[in-house]
Length: 367
Image (cartoon, rainbow, N blue to C red; front, side, top):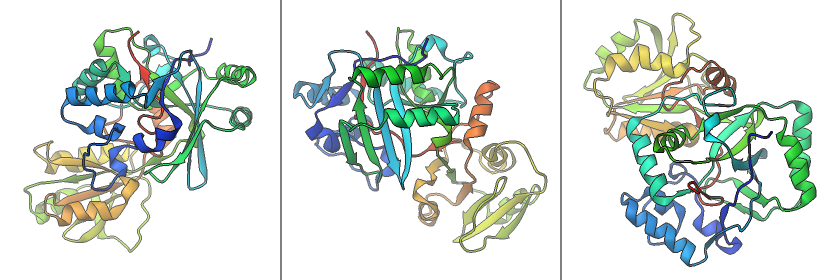
């Protein structure tokens, strides 16, 4: 029996799709709320009742509509000629954290609380939870064949990616898809742990909407840190030098595994540990540096590698922060290994890119 089930999706009319859908706010420079009805405004409003009214308005005006019957949905994202082939469906929450659906990341209590409030207030999940699964080479050939027909939606978004969505209605395509799904016996949560935990803690009968990508197509970017500390650089350098060599970085430095780059006083430094470690680079950074120089955990900001070094430099040069740390990206094999061992990575260990848009396919969560 397949782990992924069809459902009645909520999606925009084609003429509104590009206008109202949105990538994560991290992809957008200088985001400011406006009066337009779109999912970015809805998600980033500090007033949850206002957000609920915005969502209701989208439904009342017929901008988004619920499919009258259950379907699977296919979702293809193209970035720099690389394609991710996603299957969108529902999973049974009772299978989470056993041998069928596995998570890998620690979560923040406050973020879970906010997600729970938002999900229950909206009774909607406005983007699928990002997951992956293991595949054999022959399986990918079968999956490619399922995506051969013309999509129902096809446009470029503000994340500079092409997003295509299919509603699987043809019997022959659905049959191919159902046969393909039989080969998926484990699903790994990549991005969406807070939403999953919020659903679990709601104690409601909820079936999360997921998108499942083959693990070889998944791309992970570095997830970096900028911090504010009262320590002077000489003191910081002394602490770091106990476990790392510290040298000014060469121009266009390419990081390797277990290396960390640090930016301060308009200079980049390369930190190389004296001892090789099997621990994650984010764990090495936390244990050997951050825990020793950062007293207040609120004085840290997590920054996706999507925008590159210049953003990290900007944060530090603004004086709001005084140190930036750039990390080597966690890889998908590490993610799967942690999940299978039921171990948890530190928060913000991975930035999955590209991601599905908010609002292109949504679902009710309580039936």
